[in-house]
Image (cartoon, rainbow, N blue to C red):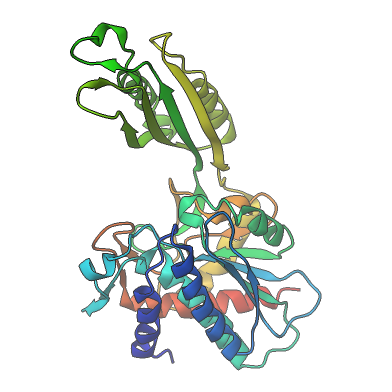
Length: 373
C-alpha cells in the first residue's frame, strides 16, 4: 500500500530544490539528492558531467538484471521556472491538489520513476531485465547536451517509458509534434532618429514585417504552428536600430510538412535589401509519429491501468519530449507521469490521487516489461 503522506513529503524536497535549466549548480544539487536516494535502495549510479553551462545528467541502474536489453525510463529534473518561483507558488496540498514549480512538469513523474526502481528492488527480483532511469538536466531547452546520450540508451533498450506529465485529465501520449527552434538575427544601419532618420535602416522594422509572415504560416488544419516567443533589439529611443533578434518555435506534425515549412521559413528574404538576416537553428526534435511499437506498448499498458482504477486513453500532443529521440528505433510510451495542470505557470499543480495511481501503474508496467521474454 502506497503511503501518500510519505510520497508528498519526499516529493516536497524535489520541488523545493529549484532547478531552472540555466542554473547548472542547482540542477546538479537535485541530481545528487536523487543519486543518494537511488543508491540507498541498492541501485548503481553513473554521473555524466555537465557541460556548456548545463548541469550533470544521472543514470540510475538496477543491481539486478541479465544481459538482455534493459527497460529505460526517461526523466528530466530541470524546469522553466526562475529562482524565487517557490515563494510565489510554494509547495502546499489543498484537497486533491499539490502545488509547486515543476511539480507537474515533471518532478512528479521523475519521482515516481525512482519509486518504481525502489519498489521493484524491494522484492529482490531475479530473472528480469535491467532497469535504467535517466535524469537529464537540459530538456526544457531542447536537450542540447543529453540528446546523444538519450538516443544511444534508447537504441539499446527493450522499451522506453517517458514520465512526462499526463494530458487532458490523465491521458498518455502516443504521438507528438516535432520541434524546430531558431534565433533569427537582423542587422540594419544605425543613425540618429531625429537629424538623420532617412539614413538609417531599421532592424526592428524588418523583423516586425518578417514576424507577420512567419506567424501567418500557422495552419491548424495541418497541425503546423509558428510562434515568435522572444524579440529583442535596439539601443535607444533616438537611434534607428542596427540590431534585432527573434526567437522562433515551429511545431510540425510529420517530416513532409515539417521539411516544407522549414524550407519556406529559411527562405525568408529581407524586404529591405540593406538589412541582413541570419538564421541559426533547425529541427530540434523529430516528430514522434504513431507506430506499431507504441501501439503494442499501449495495448500492454491498458489492463494494467484498469487494475489501478483508471482507464488508459492515448492522445497526440503538440509538445515535444525526449521520447521524440527514441520512438523510431525502440517502442516508446510517453505521458506516463502524474495528472495535473498548469505546466510552466505560476499555479502548476498535480492531482494527489494520480500520484498514487500513477506510481503503482508505472511500477507494474515496468515490472511487466522487465519480465518480457
